[in-house]
Image 1 (tube, rainbow, N blue to C red):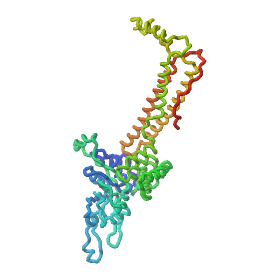
Image 2: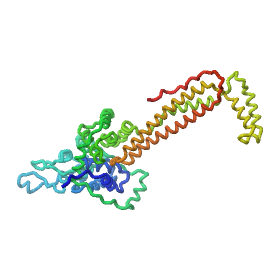
Image 3: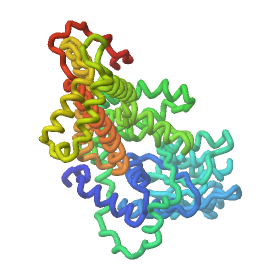
Image 4: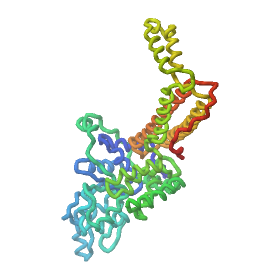
Length: 472
């Protein structure tokens, strides 16, 4: 039999589409449950009842061929028999304590456990072994299980320290909530769209091929540097990530890269951080902000330093445009204003742009303004040009980051489109801010260049505008 290959991107995309068909605002949850299952990891869905947690698990089961499905709602009174099967009466007659596991969790490939933190001590130890080791103690022997992935669900976090080890077994913790107001209309119309197109499910050979390909994916230097940077940040929050979870996370990123045909985990793969390192749904936004700021520089920049500089030049231009002639210039402001009033009272001749009275008025207005030396204007323009050069360089860097991100996002299977759009939108916002400030700088420069010039003036350069130091 020929060796199997990693499922193609079109096939995996079709599985994601089928998995999420009709589920609103579940882009991240849909992708993460499938990615976790391909990596042999478990997912915890945290959210209130009625948010499609069980439906997502049932659909995940249909994505895997030959993976029996098991589902249970746990309560404080759940018994081992409900999860692991009844005791074998025949075995008891032979003094053996064994369970009949067919149709129960030890024989499941995909399992959904609702209200997982209601598990009591009678079943907790067996669950821990099953999730982590893929083994089940049945009588005097320990047997391997075919478990691919467990999807757990809860509307609350574990309150008992005895459940923390169980909580840690779920590598991905994904908040799911009610649909937003924006999607509420679409929720009401659900059922009107056609059913999802059937897709060939993942089989055992596909999973083996993914595992083999993932083993050949290396952890890139930039990804490792970002993980090293993240660890002390998490400790300062404080958020604790066990050594086991760090290693499982790297393995998960290798699987994600392998499915996308990449041979290296890069910094962009750390978008998973909020779902691996968060201890509660409230931690997810903080971790997302860290990733966007530290790994992508995809945070909208309002350029406060540049805004203050532009405003300072605009104020100075207004001052210099409105300044009266200097004393000793031979211009009498009072007489000039009177002449200007008489000229403007001339009537029709003022209406035409090239009329004689308009020309006279313009000449008088020019005489009533202060004239500046060439040295003065050159100094103002030189300081402005320095700011312009810095801003253009800043804009070029922002555009390069946006283009680089756009290129790196191509072919990313697991990344939710809404996340990609948000990151690109942040760069677009930054570019729009810089473009607007550049336009104002050019306008201010044109204003200084148009100030009345006294070529004979021997005045020296003005004091430069006091600005904050140029940012690095």
